[in-house]
Each structure stands twice: as C-alpha cells, then as structure tokens.
Length: 157
Image (cartoon, rainbow, N blue to C red; front, side, top):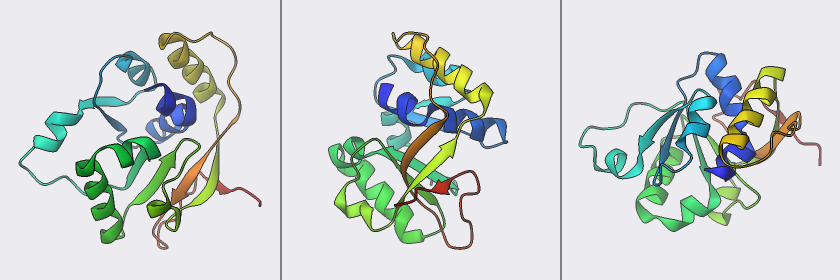
C-alpha cells in the first residue's frame, strides 16, 4: 500500500480526476483509506482472482515489481495483458523485473497541485507525516504504439 501511494499516488489521483476508472486490487486492506483518499476503488485480490467472469478490457495496468514476482497468478495475468498488446503497463517502485524491462521505459508524471495535496493526505493516513510531496513521480511504463501515455514524459537519460 505504502509503495503504491508513495510511488504513484499523485498519478492515480490525476488519472481519476481526468475521468479514468482507477481500481487498486489489494491482498491486505490495511491502509485502504489512503487509496480512497486518492479516489481509487479498492478490490480484494482473492475475490478478483476467483471471479469467474472474464476481466473487462483494461486500458492500463500498474503493478509493483515485488507483487509481480510474488504471485504466479498475478504474473500470468500481467503477461497475458502484455501478450494482448493493447494496455499500458506501469511498474511501480525502484525495481523492474527483468521479464518486464523490455516492455517499459522510465517515465515521469508531473503532479497537479491537487494531486500533491491529496497524496500528502494519503501518506498521512498510512502513518506518515503531512509533509509536502514532490511534483514528479517516476516509474517504468510502456504503452501500445497507438496510445502513448499523454500524461507521462520520458526521463532524459
């Protein structure tokens, strides 16, 4: 929870404000209030994995490298999304698994002032201090060629 909010809380907020349906699937609901502050819907991991209906088409999937590597069911689902080739993939956190690295580039999102304020509140809800947050979030992202992420810019390297 803390990694998602810390790495991409402002981006999630800004996407929600831009009209995206932002849903975060979690295995542990501790701290779910932080995601609600950001405007995200929260779903239970086991319920999502056990659902018998096929998932709807996803415009974007964001995952931490640790979660990708920790659960074979999640790993298979992410690889299926990549194989279909019509969804943006973002890997949050410092570490990008080698299996995903060829599909993504390092990108940045410039947070709106509102996103900075709401991210600060979400971090406080997780037990952090209410200190101002930075204006940029950086993570690994890849998108279909026909739909580049307009809210992200490449990191000059």
